[in-house]
Amino acid sequence: MPGASRKPIKAASWFRVVGERERPPFVFAWFCRRWSWEKDGLRKKADAELAEANTPTLAMTFPTTDSNSVVAPIYPKAMPVVLRTEVEFETWLHGDVETALAPQKPLPDDALELDFTGEKSDRV
Image 1 (spheres, rainbow, N blue to C red):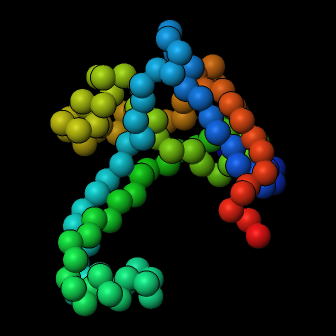
Image 2: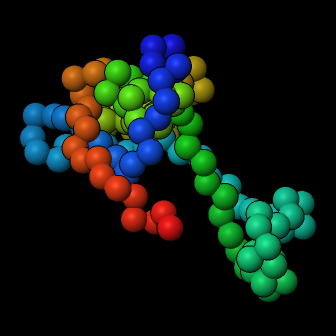
Image 3: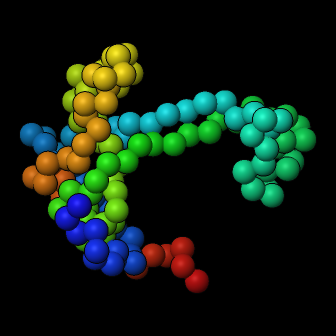
């Protein structure tokens, strides 16, 4: 994988999807399921109160793919799977498994730009 040996940049980085219009729509592919406090347990100590009340909670994750050359200098290991067209989105939601997996590849380098890199404000 290109760029995998590079050290990631330790700063907040924002990327922009490039398209025919400014701010073209896109989505991250993702999975979601109901969290079972009994079966899955606590995710962290702060969840104890939610578990005691049996609060309905969803667990969510998103698949990743290899980083393209725009993302690799910041996140060398992976980037989220990005769906840019209505066809990709509908296929992800309603297609058979083999067809739905087809868009799970890095975006072309010219489909993404680094928009901003700056200091992380959440670091103390």
